[in-house]
Image (tube, rainbow, N blue to C red; front, side, top):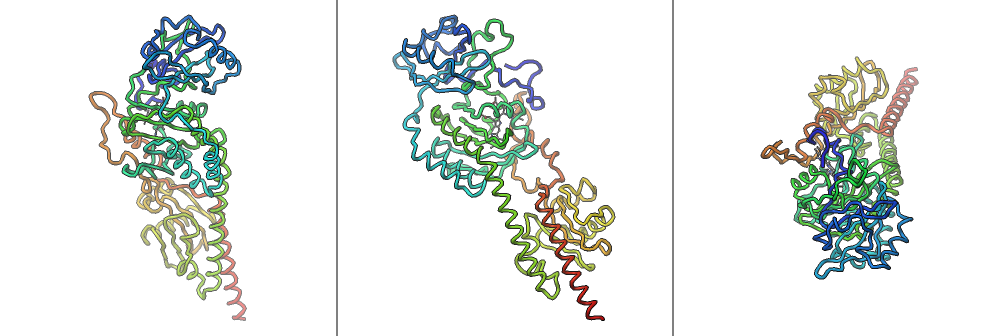
Length: 512
Ligand code: BLA
């Protein structure tokens, strides 16, 4: 299925996963020419599943499989079909002792796609409107993005019965983190785990923007080819971007084996045309989820996607409110203390509570006061010297101090991120907030694995491989300072300047 150079860990962006020429064998596929409406390709397993060979099917129409009234229904729907797949109310299975197949249709790449999927146990009574109404109500009512994701994973797990349902959220560098999870009690949690960008290559991400849901009911499958490989006149296999049965990349299948996952379903979460994250479902044993249920889950994914912007704006507003409330209380403390500095660290809240950070330091009149996790006082003194020599801003911030000053590597564990306000440049009076290096705060999925690259000459694929490469990209960096945090720091600086000016003026007044 791979063209050109063999696909390995370094070039999997180039695997043409949309044209594998193979399907997952739990169902069958017929491709009909758009114009002639005759079968031009059929999956090799029709003989097993339908007791009719691909050779018999090719060249004929759907009349070979369908009753005349069923055929009429297909022909009625045919002109309205798009690339989005649709389930027909038709059940196929004329052969005794064989399961019924449901037909799923779509139109793409000059073809009419007819996919057959066996009935699942969880087929019945899916569209329960009152509970769907409740479900949507919960997503809408969730006060934060986090709460919405938690609600979604619980509901998808309740609906589908997967062992594990998680929301996997992408960072700007395309790495990702499990931010919400509903999991069988006896399985280890993945919450907080990070995975490198390379776990989901570019072309796969592009495909998941088009096709919202992927499903692998049994990851131990042996793929079934399409016969013939190319339709007449074509130079490549048909484009399976929207096909339900598309056979997935062997690299990914190996990854799933190494994760201990036998069945998966993933749903795209899309914000403004960008892949924001995914709902990922895993099961330790094979699991067939009905098309109807998958459709319902896709509906939830789309609803969540539509709500993402609002929820995130809400989160930001809540953070903004927390910052300004903490600021206000801090300012009260500062103005009521005999020694204004005491107001910054002796009571509650302190400087540390204004925003998310690891530690803070006050460098004032030759003294250093620290809060939370900070470098040592000697190291802070060096940092202050560096700030005085190299920055002439009232507010300075970086999320990678070590990239600016190589000596900063020594303190990256506590101070990869530095946000400093200058109270007075000359004597070197600063208030500094610190953030730790991202790597120190990361739980990484492959941590307990051996770093093994090949088994019997084959690539052994697991998150471990790409993590090392990914680590390089986040080394020495902390989570970036947000504009609203920088603004809040600026306000604190102004407030303290005012207080000091007032004190100075009072002293002046008393002196005269
Ligand atoms: C695909 N990799 C994927 C997908 C996921 C992950 C969700 C989408 C598959 C789907 O929708 O069914 C990874 N799954 C995860 C992660 C979590 C999870 C991170 O549940 C965390 C909770 N994979 C690698 C490397 C390569 C690779 C190094 O790790 C390439 C060298 C390839 N991953 C790869 C490919 C696909 C993929 C090719 C596309 C599979 C396909 O759709 O055909």
